[in-house]
Image (tube, rainbow, N blue to C red; front, side, top):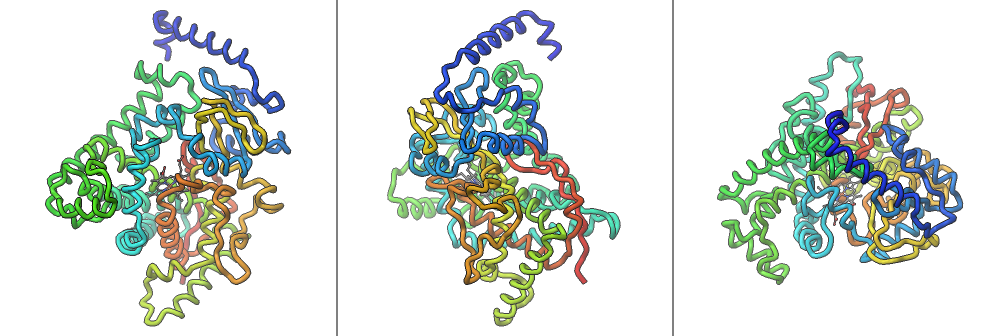
Length: 518
Ligand code: HEM
């Protein structure tokens, strides 16, 4: 940046833009004069690991009984922040069409996610959602995905024990889960290994580039000048460009090789499935089957190499970080002395289900996992308190009024604070901040999911997460294998600081005691 400061041809226009922005910012007409405005400078000050989400919670408490407040970012429309469940229902379900991701979101993510499902609206989104829904069928989950997770969970735990330096040393379980989900999504998404078990540090190669790319993309949300920096190829934008290049090089190679594959129809991974639907594919029979199923436009399932690249990258983003985050924070809770009873209940339920299964051979199967009601409650409680996607944003297409009376102008953004909502006593009662899986257990011992808009961890409505069942399956398999083989402790001593990225990584890992069960 020193170069920019000393070069008047760059610095002067930047200064002029900043002055205009500040003037516009200061003279903005308020649509909700009673709403608190949090200074953007304050948001930037609070935006550090382990802090920003708590800052939002404190703001929510300070504006109560109002449930929405504002942040004004220079060069940008008003951002309304809310913790109101009825507002979330309004955004995601009742007025879905008025709240797309919008140009702001798409621009921010374009370099990393292209027009992939996460980043698309309208027909581009619909097409991918339709195709992907087939590939996340119950049958695929029971067979292909179950096998992938089952194999990799055992492998990840073996590697974890092999790398433990001494019997008493702490284990970074976040790293174990990151390797588990990276390797699994590599097989499920690309049909190839991403080398997560060979490399002692996920932060190298593909995994590392991916981490960096998501962090730097998240930084764009609070940097009004990111487009200028991208143009100049400086700072964080330069890092982002480099990381994306690495991801692209890897993916292009895999796609090119797969195009030459004669056995495309036999391959269950997402890339092969999407490719075999494409006109460019050599697989006529599969194409016909898919088209017959949907009876739609014959060009509907054509995907170029670039489209395929973005489709798969979107799934890698969706499937890797989120599940690793969910496992990390849930195990953190389970490793605390106060939650030992939860571990006992998971094991007791598992023992009972095994004893009811005739000829149980020591390996969990898909049915046993589906029947594990208490385990589901535990995973859900982890997902409630530590939502892997802690905040989400929608853009208003037309003027609107939210259920809590907030006036939203066309173009405004609404950010709903999923992490903050989990801590609202209005929604969860006085023990909102306590890890208590039983809140999801009915009196007859069944798991009951809450209404999605009260706990939008997987979102709600038409854009509900497509990988929800897959995430539940992979988390269940890993947690059962973990608690079957190991005792965990020391959660109360582990320092956990969530990162400021798109998902809820712990910047400090999850360092706890892991002992093989006798
Ligand atoms: C605990 C794990 C997971 C959580 C908490 C989670 C959460 C979410 C959230 C909040 C969204 C909405 C994002 C947005 O539109 O702004 C989403 C969308 C999505 N998720 Fe997940 N996800 C998880 C796992 C997965 C997995 C394993 C996959 C599959 C690989 C997946 C695939 C998707 C897809 C494809 C979308 C886009 C849906 C659409 O826009 O129509 N997710 N997820």
